[in-house]
Length: 74
Image (cartoon, helix red, strand yellow):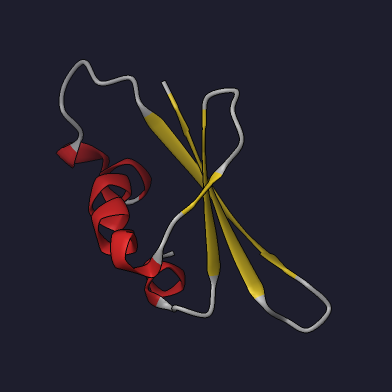
């Protein structure tokens, strides 16, 4: 997933709560990755008592352009 977050041509949407998703600007993606990686790849780095979770999925259109969708829940 890190390679998708770092690719400026990939659209990234963050879903949190019942509202509309937020598009994540390329300049903000590294900070998002630093927050998400512990939940997706390094669960030992999660703070104890933290009930936050993230799910991520990649979608491609007919032209093979990628869309990365990240959902944050707690």
